[in-house]
Image (cartoon, rainbow, N blue to C red):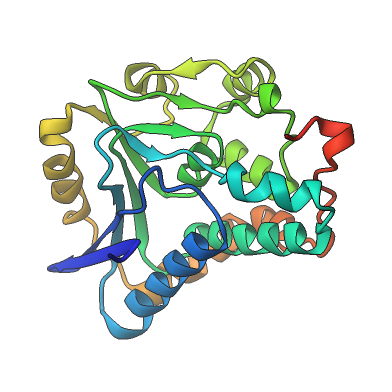
Length: 238
């Protein structure tokens, strides 16, 4: 079964992640980036919606079951290559030639929550699911590109609280702090998202240029060549 499926509804591309908790490892990241390649090259979609098939999880972020053994075995180049690939997904999301909408159909934790900040708009399930950055408890500090995505979407006063405490937010709390466009019950989430997506149909070339100017600072953070990341002894990974 494919990790990533997509359908086209008029000018809207709907991508559904179907890999369990949709954790980030090289296979998942490659599959998603390959899907973006197809949508950008082989379709004329101008709006992109991303959601999850899991009954309660949008994405739980980095696959620590994959990453921890890599770090413990001191395969640091493999670890860095993974984070370069993760940065590539972040960059492709932020600078997509399509307007992007995250349909958060459940928990968005850690890297999954960070990634969702890269979308242009977010809708979040209101009856179940939290938005959270537990990295402070996991012992994993954020990369520069991750912080740039968070600052794009979350007011600094709230980001400081979430960053330092690992607090969990509901959809209603995310809406209160203007982190999402709308909180929706799961029964209406996709209908609301698709209806909104169909109101936006902008030329790709214009969107590409506007994003390149608006998010120039994010591009700089995501393009760093050296990733000063995790050392198991320093950050208690694993």
